[in-house]
Length: 333
Length: 86
Image 1 (cartoon, one colour):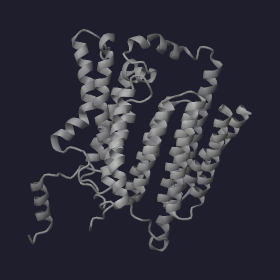
Image 2: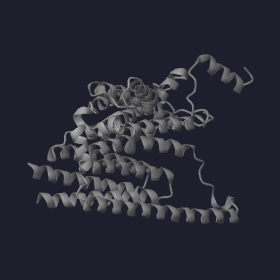
Image 3: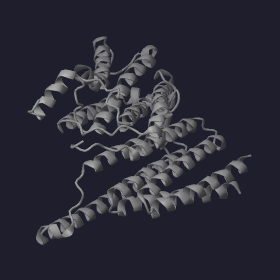
Image 4: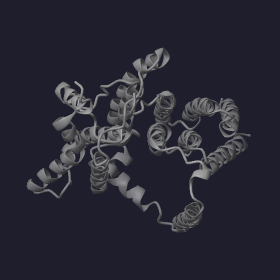
């Protein structure tokens, strides 16, 4: 009875994932497609939970279900609405359609190739009797890593290089965002109900971010999930039309953007000077060093995501700068 | 006890599925968004049940985060962006 119930449950879950994925790709309306994608993120988080992979489920819930939806909706707002068919001249339209067809087939083929590779890797892993070698190596060395959560041990200790480079990728992404120029216009002030939601949602999001950061040492969590949750607090504030969303300006902002990579490199280079390998923490200090790096990384990640939501450099809150800009825009005063 | 949890999870799955139909059929964009919220709430319930069935306390954190971020998604849908002329 129990296992039969689970099979029915899993089948329905699988059906809803495939259905939502198909629908979000097949629909032509951008906003509808984004909402279907958000629903897909929610169901995927549940599916990861069902597979007993809480680390992935947390990341999917934080980034897939909430933040990417907000990012995509803001991006869709900036898009010009598609031109009516009669205003575009026929030959150009024809070329664009042909290009779209080629692109669609190329993406389909690439997806099929990826799926084939994954199936091959899975079969290979199952046929290889030694496929639990890595998990065993990790649990054997977990005591020396400074944390008791194996995922954090891999991300921040055994494969700290990977995480350092991921943070460098995020820093590059912020530079790309800054290249877009000024941030998009803000939002209209929230109504009564939305304002009430903001009052309790933002503090709870900030508290949860701190909790996830701390929990990362011994349970699923860590800097990426915590950073995304912290960024969500800023996103909600901006959506509610607040001008101050907890993002510093000028030098402070640049310091926070670079904090993740900076602290990581500082720790690595200091260890190098002390005669240890790069990022080879001494076991007695590993726990504190990991927490320090993760805290800096959380702020960097939150700032990166929030700047991506702003879609450009934040407007200066300096009164003089604002007054100057208004004078430039309006020559009458 | 586990049977009861399993039955409840199936019930929540049914509610998720009904929400899914509304998300797919619409008709309005608001209908789809509200159905997404229903999916999120059903998902939170399922994760809480899984925490009991599989004895995985970390799923409680996932449920917490899913509930919070589903609210952010709703906020993203309702927020009205200013235009350049505002």
